[in-house]
Length: 215
Length: 307
Image 1 (cartoon, rainbow over the protein chains, first blue to last red):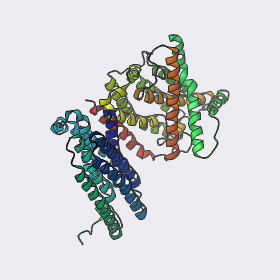
Image 2: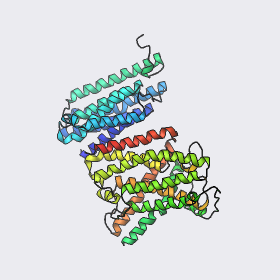
Image 3: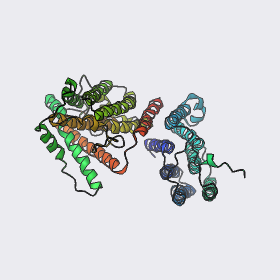
Image 4: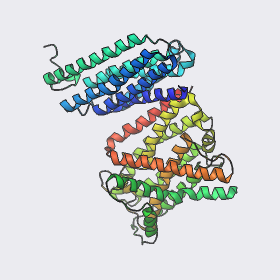
């Protein structure tokens, strides 16, 4: 696949993460995650085109079904069921979030991470973007108070790590990747059930409001 | 032939700009299941206003009287200084910082004119305009600086002639800078979600509040200048970030293609703006700085990513 197109895809992934930090609506966050997963699926498809490994095509198919379709549908149903339209709670204000995002990006591009981003020198630009997306996903998990946003942050972290390992030449066998996707599928179901139970018990998904968790 | 091209360049912005307003209004009307007015309605409105009597407050000073002429002239000057359909033209005012600050002159006089008559509406309109402009300026300069750094020139004609999309290593920077620029485009041209150009509600209006005291030909010039500003920003966005189809040499074929492609780009941007205005609500005023800071930070990231 053309390097320009791959850079465009990584750019889209970066922008979805920025959007996930800025959006105030859970539904839009779910759509952004779906777009991000689609980007990863296309990158995986690119790996299939390069290797012609049939099992990788299976990974692409599973990724498309579970990450792009099923997971967003699960989240959308949760949003509808519990009327979780808005998720505005963050620990930092918007300007501060943006400044932190820019600092994280600078760090990912800095010389400090050069040993990591230059594993394959030809892919250095892509690896730097992937690393900055990993940092931004971690920050999303830390910064958001809503459980649903945090779950999307974790899934987005998985996407960004996958993007990094593909271009760092650390890609695992298709069998293992299928196992990871299956694991994620189970995790999404369990997380959705947990979210429903948490909402039933506390009446909110804001983690700072769950004062009686130890009881 | 060069003189002829310069004449086309000079008149292109004021001639086409009312049409763009008409196209945006038409698309918005279609979204609202209305037939809407003709796409040439804005020309008729300008013609009508040019022949109407004016009412000028007795408290108005020379600023109120001359501001429409200054603002309109500024938009004509900037319109002639930026690449529209040809990249081989070059003028003394084609440096991006010169363009940004010439446009700041029009904002300055617009705000002064708003306050000049002492009306409460004009005062708060000017106050809001200066708040938005102050925050938008940094984002605008940084987004243009990104393309300047990628193309190693601050001359907008040279930037459009280089085609920055060929610099694939800077694709992410260009994408971020364009998103930042588009937010500024909406802010500077008083479109949604920053301002609603079709209402006169004191809670929402910014641009309309400042020109509320105007009537007749001065109002026509203010409205026309606003339309010119929209096409100037569309030209900057389309020709600096996507300089495809722009005429690179003096030949009739290249010029005709350049004009057609530029009109298509304008139509595309107008459609995007109309869709946006039909699908999003206007933001509360106190949320607007967040959006402008988002643009600024995106542009800062874009600049830093240029190694």
